[in-house]
Amino acid sequence: MGRFPYSPVLTLHRTRTQIFISFLVVMGVVLLVSGQYLYRNVSQLILSNAEAQVGETADQISARLDAVLSEVDTLTLQLAMDPRVQGMLHKIYRNQAVSVDDRLSLRPITENLMAFSWAIEGVEIYADRSPLYPLDLPRLHNRVDEDTIRIADERGGPLVWRGPIRRNPDQLLAIRQVPLEDEKLKGGGYIVAWVRSSILDFIRTEFSSPTGMLVRVYDENGTILAESHSAAETAGDQAAGATGWDLAAGNEEAYLKIDRRSSVTNWSISILVPKHNLTGGLELFRRALVWSLLVGTAVSLLLMGVVSGMITRPIRRLRRIMHATVSPLPKPNDETYFNFEINELNRAYNKLVAQLHHLVDTVYEKERLRNIAEIRMLQAQINPHFLFNTLDSLYWNLVARGEEESAAMVSAFSKLFRYSIQSTGEDDGVTLADEIEHIRQYLTVMQYRLRNRLSWDCRTDPDCLRMSLPRLLIQPIVENAISHGIEPKMGDGRVSVTVRKASGEDGPLLVIVVKDNGTGMPPEKLQALRSRLDHPLPAAETPTRGIGLWNVQQRIRLFYGRDCRLEIESVPGEGTTVVMKLPEGRVAP
Image (cartoon, rainbow, N blue to C red; front, side):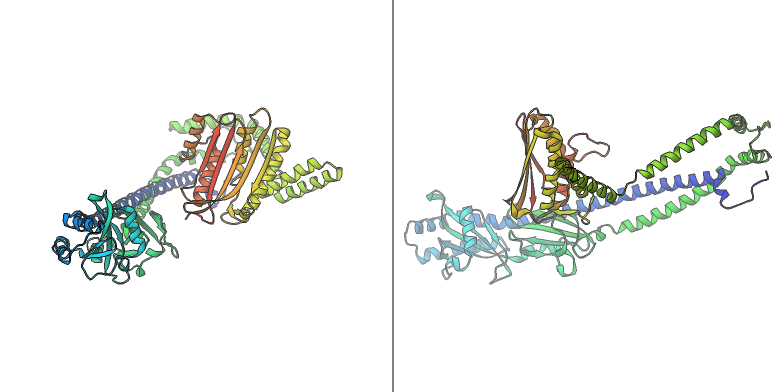
């Protein structure tokens, strides 16, 4: 047999080519993985530092705001506790007359108060709701709305802040009830301070970095009191409401959002920074990393060519000897080479030639078995539609024979299988009616298996049937109740599924309760289960118990937010109750 002609395809089978490709793949994977790891960690470090920097800025703004507001709070408190103010309010409280001169004597007090703080633009003192000073003031309810007065009465002394008022947008309102020391701190009047809204201008002048940062101050009603610049040029109004990294609605731009709340008032501070303004240096780093990977790959290719040539040159000599034979089977090679490794390879070759026929028979048998295995594997790939048709045929055959119980079981199993594999869209949501019907079919099948040991009922508020929820959200809980509660129990077992509406702090809730009268759990086991549900599983951990409940809790948190969780109660010997509360019509961002 002559030598093979040169062919580009045959070069892929050469040792040098294989070494070259293998080395290239390994080096490529190493460089890519290390590059991605380095880029990801540097990116995370930069973003973490940026988040910490913005958070520190938020703390500074919050502290500055608290300092300004505390100044007004302290001064108005001193005015409320002033003996002259207390004396006049006490007289009026006792229905005693107070002269005009006495009222005018309060003027130096208020002027001194305003002199101590540039922020206070005006101070008014009221006896109950009638003006005490200045004299020409209208009644209190003509100056301050009733809700604000009511809040001041409820707090009984602490300062109540309100945002810009309609009649003068450039002023902020602060009001506090004056408790009378001689009347067991009963309310005797009010102090109203009109504060310049310019006290919030520091967010525009003192906190202007990083570029593009939007700072806003909100009152307790969510009204914007001040902002660092116009939000019309940013996506600030479109950003998600949770603190952290969010995507702005309407575009794919990521934003860092940090929220802080004033310790003096119920005001809140929100800072929003576009991600690209914080990570501008990452682009330069990415380019440098790409060029480093390219240069490293080129150098690796050069060294690989030299090393592979040194390895394969003696092997090519031995290969020529192997192809020089004219027999269909290779002949032993008696030549001795100077290279020790090549001599070892030649001795191994001669040994392989001696066992060739045995190896051929072995390889043939393995190939035959492999072909049989492939044929069986292909035969095992059944089309689900064919399986549905088969189950339907079996169902009607059982009906024709009058085996109604077996037919019902086959029908329930077919519906279970069809419900489990079908998909309704990207989020795979279904109506509660479909989910409850699936639970009924599942419990039907389980009742056929457990017979008299299992009874069940499903009670659902009709108003809830059209609500949407993720597919297969209830079935794992029911399955867990049967597997760990009913099956180990001796005697009759019962599982009940109840769905109803309820009212929550943030709106209406859909409450799903799965209860069984099984074996229950001792307190330490229940506590361990709750702890496992509240913590993410390590990547290398695959638990054998509790994975169904853990999976359900993770899914409801992904769909409805981190506040959603399973509530589990269990009493040994009495059973277990699992409660799931889902926000009606709300999906987590």
